[in-house]
Length: 133
Length: 133
DNA sequence: TATCTGTTATATGTATTATATAACAGATAT
DNA sequence: ATATCTGTTATATAATACATATAACAGATA
Image 1: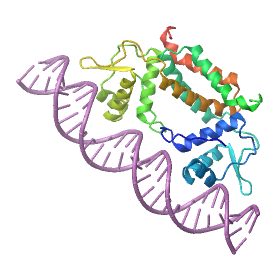
Image 2: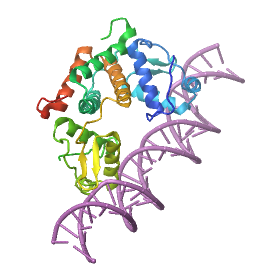
Image 3: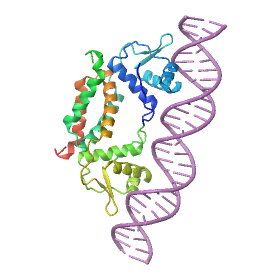
Image 4: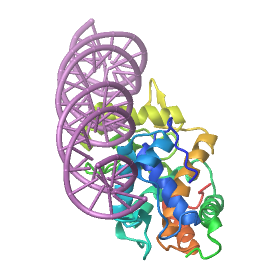
């Protein structure tokens, strides 16, 4: 687990951690059923508070990306990952619309914008071994 | 100016307003040189505080999307819009990477993801009349 | 028994967001 | 000139979010 958080970022630490963990699942660095460090261990290794890690874990659990076994601790969702829910679609639309509008105003062509989207999707699943769906 | 803000949203009001104004510029609803309502007028018509509008205007001015003339008031940047700066690229990368990773984990294919990106870019400039670059 | 797990409770400090009221200097219109 | 409108600045207050700290609980583990 090579996770780095930016303490200077405007993004909250718990959101950064959520992003890093989802990116880990997308890339295959974290596979279904894989155990995650305990909240206390991860907090210590990241140099942040236990409750900040716990908040990230709790939100990821609520969304179905993680499971908490009384015995095995926190693990990556071993069964079906959450699908494209209405909430996720709404978030995707909202953020993409905002990014696309600013990109257009700044003179970024549709091709350039779409190419970046494609490239970053490819980067996200790069390490999965081609089973990226 | 048909702007609606979501008072329930997690997004701050001043950020929502920034998004709506940039989207207005992207779509052509707001053209270079167009005057914007005064901070007090817009605040009243949106039902929010003067300082919240002023914060949005100030940030948009700092980024070069708006200009403040002592005589003409606040207008849409009449000269060259800000280009694709390093800061914007960094923001674009950060947010797209996060969205792409979650989309991939949720089973959204690269094609579906890229198509949404393309569609939302097209929606953003739809009313510009095809001079979208 | 001692230790580790997630979880919950409580408290504190800081920053952000949004509001309110007031005032200033420049420009505009009557 | 007087009154009004402009962006801007100052100050204050309340609510919320973020991050931390300390403590405790029940279940599982060694």
